[in-house]
Amino acid sequence: MNKKKRSENFRSEVSRNRRANPFKFGSIVDEPYFTNRLEELKRIRSILESEVHLILMSPRRYGKSSLIRKILKTIDRPAITLDMQVVTSEIDFAEQLMKKICSLNPLQKVKHALKSFRFIPMVSLNPGSEELNVSFGSVKAVDLILEDVLNLTDSIFTKERPIVVFDEFQEVRKISVHFEKRLRSILQYHNNSNYVFLGSQESLIRDIFEQKNNPFYHFGYLFKLSKIPKKEFQLFLEDRLKPQSSDYMEIAENILTFTDGHPHYTQRLAFQVWEILASANEIKYPVLTAVEQILEFHDVDYERWWSSLKRTDMKVLIGLTLTDDSPMSKEFLQKFNVGSSSTVFSSLKRLLENGYLVKIKDHYEIDDPFFKRWISGKRKS
Image (cartoon, rainbow, N blue to C red):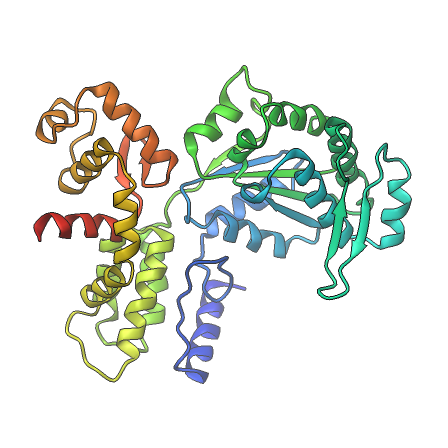
């Protein structure tokens, strides 16, 4: 479906239900909320149609999962997605993966495949929720179980090549010290599957896939997902704000100025702005009002975040709020009294790992523009 047709369909939907907010945040985004990303869709689909694996990285909430999900819906192939953040052990990984394999194949086919397993899992159906449960019990031969389950992923789909997505793959290093090496030793022999590795911590993902001494060195095509191009995002916002205000172009511009085009926070702010515009009250500055409402709503959250930080981290965040100077520069160190460059480097690493900062090329910035505004407001009050 071309862009013009999608736009016409969206406006038709809006006209049928004027009360439906056309923006969405906080979960996987699909049509009609998905922002085009036409070039990325084309390139990633091309990679998945080859026999090359894909490593897709970007800061959190840039839309990696939504993008992959959209592509998977257009490819007629079985797909498995496993969120590594909720995997607690190697056995848990095998059990969760096995459960997803079972859900995509007839039970009789799975039973036949299990005959070759060295340790047979217990597979049962929860009568209440009709959800499959898979358990290998307390078996200690983790390497054999991993090998059997992963090899089944590559062999059971005989007609179509499966696509297996590991979300937040950098978590592999928290699960077990041997897990990364074990996975690589098995996956390298798979010829029937495409593997997709999603990651939100660039330094860890680059270390896993770009360092020669690591098992997954150059295992696939490394693709960095950037922010949505401003022009593309601007048109997306305008199309949805136009039914609510004659100032839709200015409002869209103001939203993007505040969020700097961050996909999640742009949708969040646009959602709040739309709610304001849809109300009976006329508000002169809807974007500013929406920002203030969101800050008020999350004030307790930001207070908790702030109180959990180390003093050096606080100083670095304040500095990044008030200046565009590099936090490693002499001017920054002196102005904000943050100590030595090694101390600041440790703080930056910590803030990156905890999701407070993102690094765009050599530039550090606070990920959440609302948290940045909250810090600025507290400094002024």
